[in-house]
Image (cartoon, rainbow, N blue to C red; front, side):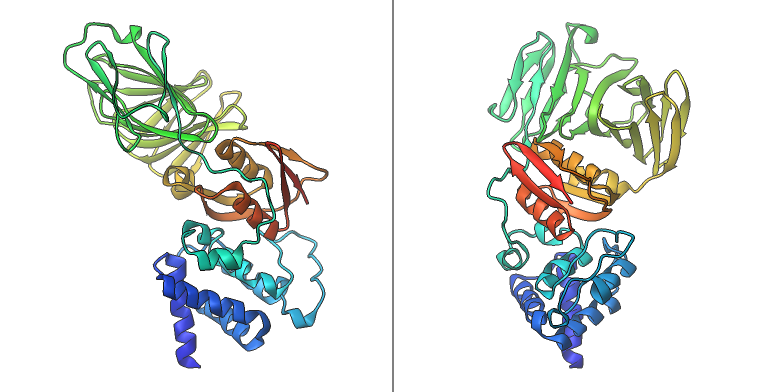
Length: 400
């Protein structure tokens, strides 16, 4: 039994880290399934989780133990567990036939979807209940040139797309858009403004004329010159955009959004400036930036985030960098998020509207889910969490 417990602990760690082989995944899932009607085996699973030293689990030990100890109960005890007065963080489970999903959510909300090629996992954890489905977004964007002409990048061929003065615009094989500016320019920067915009369900990466790299999230845009002036590099953004700015002391890099402007010399930072959010946010990953508007100015250090209210006032706090830039890595990352926050991200990525039927469910969600999954798989996880969702036309109907 000791050897089996050690093996189980090993499988937990392999699966959680994403390093499990197909054979190890099948072995682990078989144990999970067998635990449904085996009290001794389910107890060993519980102990393996309690004794594990997994780094950065998406559930706290307290939450996961509560699921195992109280919310999830063996089938032979019968009945449903009465829901506690205060909603637990993330989800409620009632029968051991859902223990597989419970374990996955404990290890990491959506871990199984990061390894969606493992069919054994999908067969255990996913019960398709949504017939209508929507695929995730992808590399989609439109480029508007200085003369007003447009290029749909997702259908454009690779290679040179345009030339503006001495600047060449290339679409690379990986979908990246690259601006290459020669030393000789025959037009002024102010006369050659370009704009890259992504729709809902789109993301794109661009290398600006100075070599700075920019990532655009869904429903976002960046306006920039095909060649920067000698004294400054200025761009304007909407939506959510991540920057890795090339350092140039003689030419400060400036980013404007709303009434606020960011000034940097060379640094990495994220700007979230969606019009439907309560505030705009700038999060510094490395380097330093200063933010200025009519109401305030603020300096940020790495790991800090500035929140800019609609009134223009600014507040500063420490940020979870992994959470902020998860979208750039292809992940939804939720940290004590409400169902409205979850659905807002889903609506942008899947290009779908959301409607709430009756009382809005009161839940707090914590965890990571791959952005590569169809929307039905995300909704299935919310169903396990006690939130009912269905798709009608291009709307998600949410109810408790």
